[in-house]
Figure 1 (tube, rainbow, N blue to C red):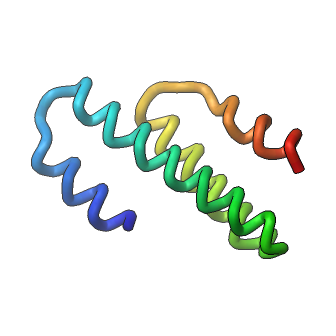
Figure 2 (figure 1 turned 60 degrees about the vertical axis):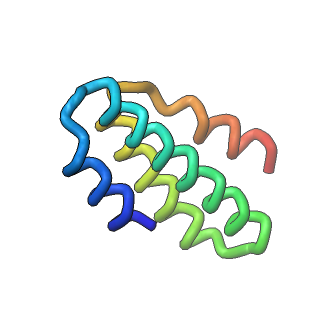
Length: 73
């Protein structure tokens, strides 16, 4: 999944398009992290949250989603 997203980034030149790709990647990582946490795989969930936060940082956004994920657990 990550390699596909990064390959898409290399084809996109406009900054707003790159931002969208990073945001979609972050959303996917957060969703997968939530599923992993529900299954009890907290180590994988933590790693995915870090990847999602990295994608958000690249998009230039804050990381409020991680707080929502923790509150719902």
